[in-house]
Each structure stands twice: as structure tokens, then as C-alpha cells.
Length: 394
Image: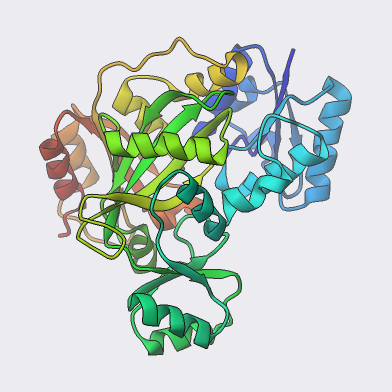
């Protein structure tokens, strides 16, 4: 029996479904987390062979000892994953230290985590990238801005989501930003675009066995910084140009046996980087799209990506096929805002389409809002009406 260590299997709360299908496929599923065992959901407890609680996942030595315990008790560890952006570096270090060869290792961290390094591999795939410089001092930044003009975007070179990402529109804002002594930031030219993603489950030969994508019409940076409501949606079919570039990016990064979420910009106007409608690079994420997105993929494709992923891990293939296709809309309401229609109004109006209404965990709420509404629609027009009514202010 093969052994799979799942780091932090309780977060996000829907990730127990990955564990369930791994167990159903014959794996010992060994969980490591900082949540007390009694606080795990019943579904997750039933999906794990054993669980090792650490006081904090931030303590590498403690997590290392947990992996060593499982290796001593169950034998060689075949896979170790968290499917979580925050722990990708930790996963790679553990694979390196325990010689687990089914995933990225320590030497791969730079290319999968540093935005400046990602650009090299996007270029290798033939995808255009935004001009950039690494933030060091005022003169370096000023010279770069002299080339690309204001506004510019600054963000951590190694960052998660849109956290600590800012738009600078003047020398005053640049000086104010630099006065905080930012460390390890990247500065990029501003791109007027919406985000289109390539989401896929890739087998051990680098071939996709499932593909989909989503669209984020509004800036996640603005949603976070302005405490705005959040929207994005799963498309009913992957865009052909995004799919083609996504496959090239998989090859350039040497991705194997992974769930990936690659982000691209679709230009909303003619710009230095390209023409309106063209697709250019944003960043790669070597894990599933966050939060409840895997459930949205299921709704949009009438399928089960948790099982497809577990089948890929166990058998390097799947018999699960997509069914009827839909747009799956996510609307995230922000606490403290007054909305024209109550939650009950939305339930009454969209009972035929709603799939889930839930509170968002605080760790995800900055980008996703505090209360989510998921619904499926056959047309974009129906979806747009849903967004308007869910998010219309009083």
C-alpha cells in the first residue's frame, strides 16, 4: 500500500475530499496539521489512516519529525502534498529531505515561487511578460518608471495572492512606499486587463487529463486594498488561446503529477505589451485554484476534480469525464456593506441555480469576501443579472 502525506488536510475545509478519494484508491492517507484531531470534521477523520498534530506548521523541525514518524511506521513515503500555495516551499523541502521524488524539490522553489523567475519560463513557453525590475532603491525604480511610465504595480517577489500588492501613480506614492523599507519586492508595468486562468490536472508525462479555467473581471488587488466585494466565474469551456498557452507553460515548467492554476492577463486595450484581446503572462501557481474553486470546477463541468486528481495520483489516468457544462459564478459579499436584497431574497429568486451559500474563512476573506454565493447558469446574461442582484448596494 502506498503512503501519501497530506499537509494541513483540514484547510481549506473542502480539501478532505482529496483525502477521501485517495483512501478510496487504496492509499494510506497520513495527515499532518495544527488542528486538534477532535476538531477535524467527521468526513476528514474517516478519510485519514492516521493524523499527527503539531503545535504549528511553521516549525519545520516539528513537521520533519512528524514525517519521520510516518516513514518509520508505514515505510517509504510515496507522495507529500498540501495543494496549498502557502506550504509549497515547505512541501518541497520535505520532499528533498526525505527523497520523495513525486513533486518539486528544494532546487525548484525559485522557479515556482519567485515572480521574477517565473517570467523566464513563461518566455520559454512563448508567452509575453510584463516589464519589471526588482525594488532596490529610488534611483533604480525611477529609471524603470521612466521607461514604462506610471502607474506601476509593486508586490512581493515571493507572495501569495494579492497580499501587499499596490498600484503607485506618482513620485510621492513611490517615495512613501520606499520609506517603509520594502524587502524583496518586484515592480511591474501596469497592465489593463482581466485575469483568465488555465486550471488543469497534469499526469506524470506532463499531459492534461482535465482542463478548465476561470475569469476574474476585476482586480484582486483592488478588492483586497479597497475591501470590495468579490466576483469571478468558471467558464463553461476553456478559452482556446488560454488552453494552448497553458499547455505550453506546463511543458516549460516541467510540470508532472500536479493540479495547477496558471494566471494570464487578457488585455482590455492596446498597450505596449500587446493588442486588445491578446493573452499575456501573470503568474503560475503549482496547486489548485484556492478556496472553493475545485467545487466550482465540479459544478461548471458536472464532474469530480477531487476524484480526477486522486485517480491521477494513483493510476496516472482517470475514467471520470466531464458532463453538462455551465458557467459557475462566485459572488462574495463583504461584511459591513448594505445590500438591496437579503440573503433570503437571493435564495427565493435563485433557488434553481444556487449551489452553496457559506461563510468564507478569515484566512481567505481578504480576496474572496465574507459570504459567498455560488450558482450555475447556462448563459453569461443570466450570470450577469445574478451578480447585479447579489452585489447591488441598498
